[in-house]
Length: 248
Image (cartoon, rainbow, N blue to C red):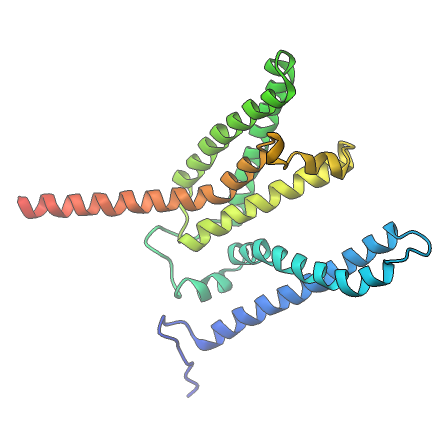
C-alpha cells in the first residue's frame, strides 16, 4: 500500500514538494520574462556604437534581471497563493483556519475595481473643485489623504464581508492590490494618458512632498492590519465570554 509521507503539519510531503516546484518554476519564468524585457529595452534605447553597451549588457543587465525577477516573484507568489487551492493548502497546514473559507480571487479583483472607481471619483473631485483654488502640491496632499481614508473604508468593508482565512492570505491580498495599483498607474497613464515615465516617477518623490507612496503602502498592508485587528478582537471577546461564564 502506498502511504504518503506527511510532515508535522499533516500535509503530504509530495504536496510540499509540488509547492516548491511551483515556486521555482514561477521564478524561472520570471527570469526569462525579465531577461527578454530588459534585453528589448536595451536594444530599443541603445545608440549606435554606444561605448558602454557591452558593459551594460554583461554586468548591469544580469543584475537587473535577477533583481527584477525577485521583486516580481513576491506579488506573483501571492497571486499563486490566492488562485491555487492546492498551493494554499501546502502553506496553511492542510485546512481552513477558524476565520472561514479562503476568499475567492474574483471577489478580491472586484474589490480592487471598487477601489479604482473610488480613486477615480476622488481625483475628479480634486480636479473640478478644490484643486482649482489650491496650490498643486497642497491639492495633491489633500487628495492623497482623502484616498487613504476612502480606500481604508472600502478595504475595511471588504475585510468584514470577506474575512481572510489566514494571515498569509491577508498579506497576499494586500500584495495583489498593490501590484494591480502600480501596474494600472504606470501602464494606463503612460500608454493611455500620455504621461512620460519621468512624470509618473516624480509622483513617488516624497522629498518633494509627493506622498502618493503612502497610499500604496496603505493598500499593501491594510488587509493584514485589519485581519490582525479582527483576530485580536475575536480573541478578546472569547476571553471575556469565558471570564463571564466562570463568574456565573
